[in-house]
Length: 380
Length: 252
Image (cartoon, rainbow over all chains, first blue to last red; front, side, top):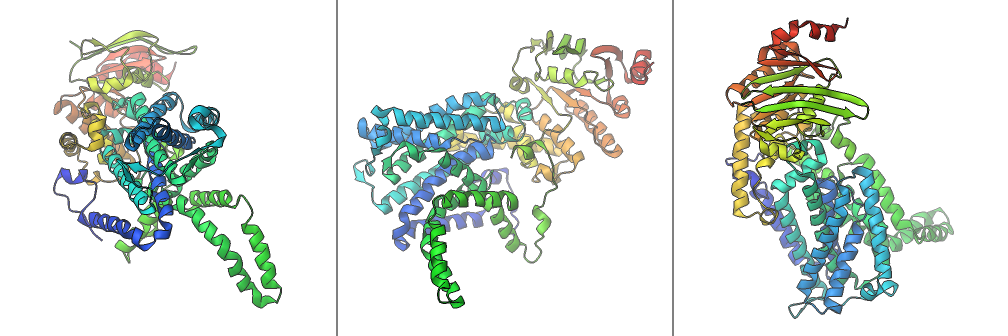
């Protein structure tokens, strides 16, 4: 087990705990930089992981750190995507300006949505954001002059400062750069007074207020910052899918984002990224399994009789091709996580780390908490 | 001149008058205690002073300034800090993070500066940290600095909450039942902390308390209230022997 020996207060302000941790992250970065050489066929999927990572950080700031659960974040993604595409196609603005506009417009909308949040908490706020998302979806459908309505809007490949970045590898690096930037900025906020004020609001509004936190300012700033990140993610997302239509930004997508932060682990940036990996790659895994599982099971069943193999294949095949399998699996996994690992993938990861660093002295009870019904427990 | 003056405070909850014309003046560097039976309106007076409730009538003057209409988050900046009866700490944060939030009233960095974590933000953070460490030293919280609040014993949490209030550099400290839920020894420790806060830091203390041994060991003056009305004011001994106070507690 390693102990970090602290010799100055400045040490507590660093992003990385110590050199060992920093080196691990450098290694991860190097791994991500050479990844295009290793799995060129899957780069598109990994780009989506990065974009979802941005969405995850966005919702983590709001739900995980400030305690304001939004069920309408897909709407911010949609606003960002449409703003960006309208700016670069219809207005002919440069790509970077498009992203900046997407960021600014979503942040402004975020403030508007945040204002009612001053009066609402918990589930009431979630319902309000859900209603907001439905309104935005309707606006995207009806405002045909800007959004193209139900016919949709094709999106060109990104060209930044005259450089074509539409190739799989190039786009991969663009997304990675944005993700790292967002992580750095968010990490900065979280180690500064603003981040502390957000966490304070999550745990006890009344105490935060009596320590001098202006609830109105910090709740709206959390909404605005979260929405701005979502806007940037939307701009990238538009290029990733290549075609915008209102029925992409549904409530189901919002729920997937929420799933991301819960499954990843509420209240940590790691959690947002773990969740993004999970949500972005699960559909890929499911579609792989669709092809593989029937054949695999029929091979398993064939020794039972000469028709058993074929019959199993047909039955299993019919089952896995049923529509609704994917949302069903998402739901099942969410329920299992809440039941068995409320701290999410990141919580499990921490336990595994601790197991190895304290081996053979790991105690399972380390993470066991007494059931308490304190304010912050109820909020979760 | 008094540090805090309450002038004819009235607080109605619908048809219920919880506080009915309470006036008092607190001198600088004194320990002023409000006592009274359950439901007498002590905590309501507290919430009025910390501006969580809007008084129906009356005025609050802090250091010569009318604070009756000041928003609650402005109170800390003016030098009033409080603790809560049922401990309102940030449970999933460390003691250090809790105390750093106590420095929020002294925040001078702007959002954009924090976003980029400019050198100025780093300097200010180090200043906050030093201020917090002085409070940690003062209240002997060093062993708990990096523990999560959920893992701490109740008695320690009480001290942490008081430390967080001290981190705002208050001139007036409001303690809502500092001894509730504490053992006899912890209550004695609490009395020492309160005396130290008054004599070493020179902070004025307004507290609501039930434990008469704590009240008589630290209070300079005691105000007894019943049914929202003041019934006696004086030293702990005078108030305890006041016939109306005895009647309020024992009935008759």
